[in-house]
Image (tube, rainbow, N blue to C red; front, top):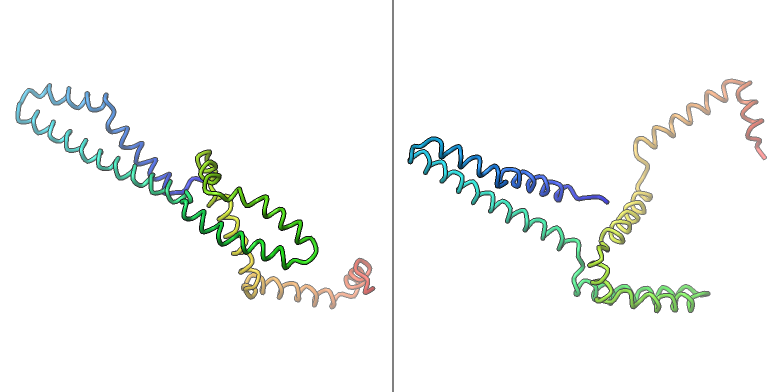
Length: 189
C-alpha cells in the first residue's frame, strides 16, 4: 500500500509530539523544577511547560485536520457518485449500441454493472476501505499518460539509439563475412 508523503510527514510530526508529551516526560520536568526550590524559577518553568503543551495541542489539532483533509480527498461524495453514474452509464450504453455485433450482450453487462455505481454501494465499499480514486483513477491516469506519450515524437535517447543501430548496419555492410552470417540468420525471404 502506497502511503502519500504528506501522510508520512504527518505521522512523523505526530510521533514527535507524542514523544515530547508523555506523562513521564512532563512529570520529570515538573520534578526537576520542584528541586530548584526557588518560586520564581518554578513558576517560570511551569509556565514554559504549559506554553509547550498548548503549542503541542495546537500542533496536534493541525495534524488531525490535515489527516482529515487527506481522508476526505480520498473519498467520493454522494454528488461525485451521482455525477459519475449520470455521465458514464449513458456513454457506456452508447458505446455498446454502436459496437455492432455483441452490443446486446454488452448492454446486458452494463445493466448488471449499473447497480454497483449506486451511492449506497460506493459508501459501503469506502467504509470497507476501498479507495476508488486509487483503484480506478490512478490506472486511468496512467493509461492516458501512456497513450499521450505514445503519440509524442521520439526523444533524443530514442533518436540516439536509432543512429547507433544505423551505424551498426554500416559496419555490418563493410565486413563481408559478418554480412554473410547476418544474411544466413535473416534471409531476405
